[in-house]
Image (cartoon, rainbow, N blue to C red; front, side, top):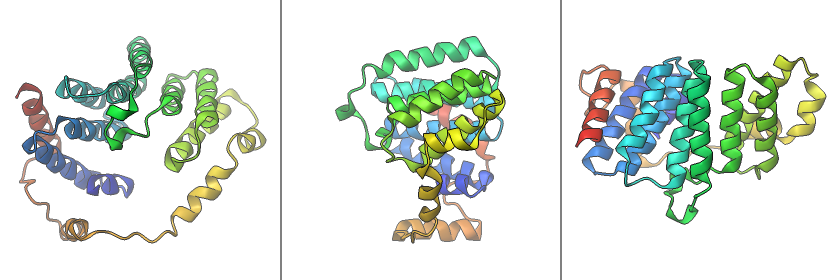
Length: 243
């Protein structure tokens, strides 16, 4: 949670350190599913920071490290994250192959087997990932179609995901030279009005998390040591894969 908060607030060096700590704790607990989830989140941060090769490798590490432990949904999500990174690298064929694998695997989804943390990943979410990929591959027609498919198939439970899909749709419509305001308004008029009130919801942080946040502000992170976060993450990932 601390890592995700750091990511959202733009503290990316600190975020990496929290991810390293979380990965170390998951390894100690021998919880490979949790470790895979952490690696997937690290993939998203690496993609955001422009480290696309690292992002693709993190997605593959999530797949390899959770072999025999992951569900179909987890596998599909990791393949989609790999595809996102490959799209940013301009590797269209490899991206398409990863998306194809994600689609075929998600057809075998059994939500009763899934950990709660992956419940959000469904066909609508996969459509959003297709939209991201096609936007980054400079195929705005395909990106528009998949973003609209995503927004048409969601029930509005995941406001953040809907917002990002709407941004993909907006980018793609602009790339196509399509008039933006009226068409976008017809597609998802409630998203902006629903996001704004979220900022006014009071956040009640439990005791252990408050302690982590205090250490955050004091510049201390237990167990992180002096290793650069990316190097520590690589070593932990290697130990997870080859344990």
